[in-house]
Image (tube, rainbow, N blue to C red; front, top):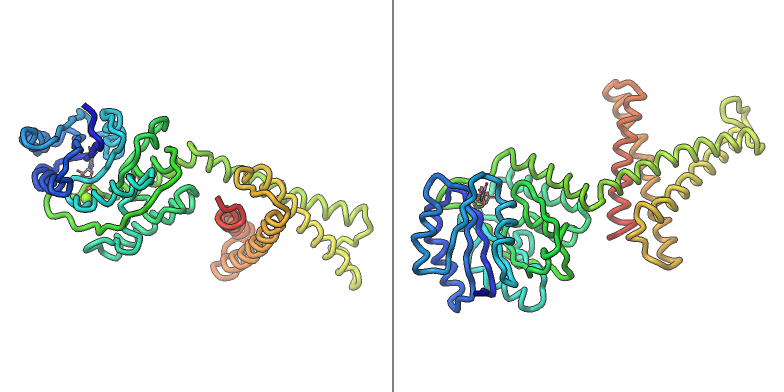
Length: 371
Ligand SMILES: Nc1nc2c(ncn2[C@@H]2O[C@H](COP(=O)(O)OP(=O)(O)OP(=O)(O)O)[C@@H](O)[C@H]2O)c(=O)[nH]1
Ligand SMILES: [Mg+2]
């Protein structure tokens, strides 16, 4: 029998939450048409038995996995074990209010491929979070926006409360680690329209949180893995290699101009020659910016290369501006580290180059070559 929506709920030691959760879902979806699949990682507190005790009265079942493979992988297994057209994922601990489920399903009905329960759109929020947890959560979303450009349009890519059409993940190679299954789906799935539906992430009343410092590390590993699998890491490496090629253009052209083209080298300049040497320097710097721009435009960001002369010139202008600011950052950091902190000058310069490269890459990727 086919149900129109499968609710996938990963559990680990959530016994006392099961009955209140199922009852609230039942009240939120009075017309039925859903089935709940709990994916339990062999909880020791009798979570699976609590689900089975409800099976006579509600459309629930539980799949118990022998090993504790984690929340995100539980959802992937749940997707494979169901066949409904619509899938909804939520936590078991009632932090995701079941009363929001109809709004998520309505969004899907109205044409969204993914409907995300979002804490970061107007009307959404987190109840009782410490400042530290807020900062960590916002910081995590920022890291995702920075490193995984496809998540930029979504304010809460870390949410664990969402609904989607099965076709979004039908051909996707999902291989998540840790907690953030939505991130995996946003990056690896196929969809046109994702919408965010506000909800308040309430405090857990029963059972214990499984969130700990290890999850933060796992999160970073997951981001890195997604960067690798979606080509974002290769993009960054290309950008760095092109940056290196720019140094060659810069130095090489200065050498050509001052040794063979009549410009005066700066090292043995007499008063009037300083201008000539600096002109050679400026020409070589700008030339390297232009070659870097062209290579990045047709190589690193070929997929974001909007057509048209005006757009091209706009990008060239942005790139110049960002590189100029990058150069100022480099000067500032080198001075700060050497004069302020007494660091060896070449080491300061190396650190400054790394910081300026990150600046150049991320601002250009965010602005010049907008996805
Ligand atoms: N199957 C499975 N489920 C898990 C695992 N870890 C956590 N869960 C479930 O995933 C959901 C979210 O876990 P929580 O510990 O509540 O994490 P959180 O909501 O981000 O953090 P808190 O706000 O502190 O509760 C809950 O339903 C957990 O029972 C796991 O290793 N395997
Ligand atoms: Mg929780």
